[in-house]
Length: 437
Figure 1: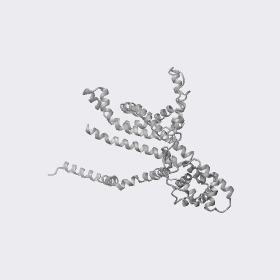
Figure 2 (figure 1 turned 135 degrees about the vertical axis):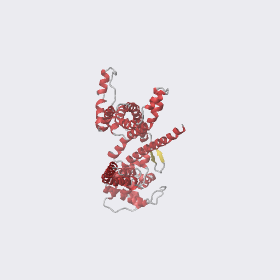
Figure 3 (figure 1 turned 30 degrees about the vertical axis):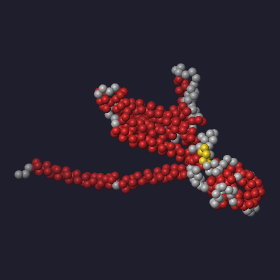
Figure 4 (figure 1 turned 90 degrees about the vertical axis):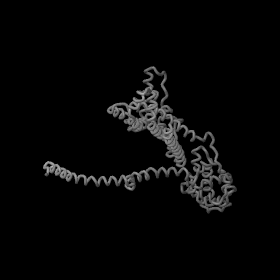
């Protein structure tokens, strides 16, 4: 016998299945497409291709071109092409051939007419002080004595140049020119580490009054390390308190942390320029509370730089650390206390080790960001508080010495990369140490 109710239920099931078929048939191609995109490396590459092209064209290539200026400087080769050919076979030990004197005399006149003599003489002056004066004086004498005449032969040009300045007979002068004519140079990288090449090619340290960049690099790392330590000391308890708040209050406090993060750096630094002076808010409040007798010097020194950088960079620690602390159950500490641990011992031995990844990631982000700071030291610091980025901007915008700016950038980038490698090595050793324990 057939069951009418069963038949009706079966019919309803068939009907519902038939009604669901078009929707599921539409969903299957979408799911298949998602599987193809996420499972196919070529599809994933197509998704990130626009961003990769943008980063390559507008970020990686400009930085690479800038960094190459640290070792590639064709200024002298462009200004003295005939001299380059005349010195091609010179070994640098004896006096150059007579044709080199005629070539350099012709190149000086041609470079001055082309407008490249000033830049080339400034480049040579970095290797041997006095070269700029020598080249400009030679140009003026050649213009006065041989204007409109044919190019003299080698011996005549040699006598003319020696009559202008006896340094043209000095072997060191020609060694510097021969070395600078080669576009591939190490002069900027050596200068960045407070060294230089002597006229004979030996690498020698600069005098104490000229070797300034290694101390500046040390100052940059010291300020960044102090700022990072203060950010960790202030940011860790703030984030711990934030992670323990109810969700509604968490959003309010997190918004208070992020509002300065979204504010322009110039606006925040301008605010500190109002708060920190001797007549500013901090000194007035401290004097009204009888905490100080004389106003404190908080501006245009390292104190103002560190205070402003801590204020700017503290969200860079709070955000990654908060993401880690939110995932740590509070029951872990309660369980340790219930087993007899002291509350501080439970916090230190149970909770803190779980937050180490967030602390290290945030501290590394703060430290690397602090290494490249320029605006805060420039506006709030004194002459002895400027960091390496200030001098990179100075050589880029003021003196237009792209080679030295690129060399300092290479030094800062290399130091940062070395720090990151050390961090990765320490991070890789932690799981092994934990496994042994």
